[in-house]
Amino acid sequence: MAELKALNVAKADDTRKANSNLAIRFATAIVCAPLIVALLYKGPPWGFYLLALVATLIGAWELFNMTHAGDRVSQAIGVAMAAGVSAALWFSQGDARVVVTLVVVVALAGPLLTLVRLGDMRTAALRACAMGMGPLYIGVPLTLLAMIRRDLGEAGPGFVIVTIMFAWFADTGGYFAGRFLGRHKLYEAVSPKKTVEGALGGLVGSVLGAVLAHFWFLPSLSLAHGIPLALVAGALGQAGDLGESLIKRSTGVKDSGAIVPGHGGILDRVDALLVTSAVTFVYALWFVPQGH
Image 1 (cartoon, rainbow, N blue to C red):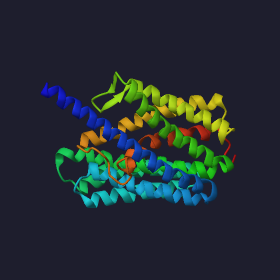
Image 2: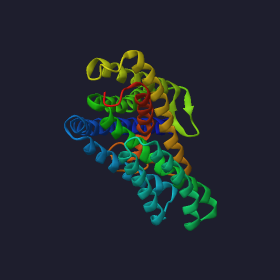
Image 3: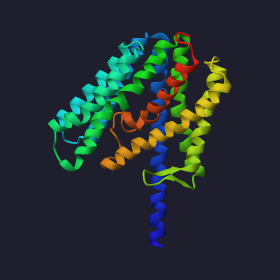
Image 4: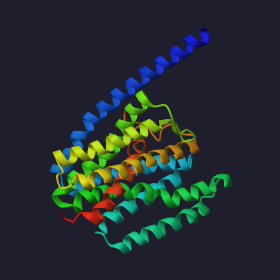
């Protein structure tokens, strides 16, 4: 009887925490969403890029704080590399030579810099790979989001918003579907609370975002294109969420940071957006005329 009572108390406590967290999430969204929309539609393209750059710097700091715990020099180097990747991509104006150079230089810099900052040999491989991939993983997708705003002309802000919707609507749909319908674990070793039902609810949320965008503010994104794009972006965005969870679990961290109320760190908020940004950019590269 005592064990049953303790279990009921624990469930009630989890419910209160979930409700409180949801309220904080909505409050944060209510404050941030209008600011982002105003910046997209009223501000210059470089203004939104500066926002993306700040998110890149914070996200890179969080990543390297996990992979290079206690090594402030390496953390600073990683953040500087992410900033360099972002700036080079933004100012490249689509020059493929810049992209190739970034990939080659950053990938090789990882193990070479780790030779200089050797530290514990048992974590050297992790740190070498993180330094060689982290600046690209954080710096490229968020900059692509700003490039969508800049390069797609009048449709740019709308494509940015629908890209964010793919990630955030999937997160919201997955939250509610998982909470009320979740029965089957999705990937328990990486994220114990995520369920198959939640993942399907997330895809419904992404598709809803595409439908709303088409009928509300982005008619140029047809349903014939928008729904498949939403399914691909939504599915891969959820994989991006799991990927960030893998990094946190493998480094013994619960949240990447605590800068966003109700959401943890920047990476906890943009883990799916990193992927949906890349998916939408590639779609736009192939199917949307630049400056459209």
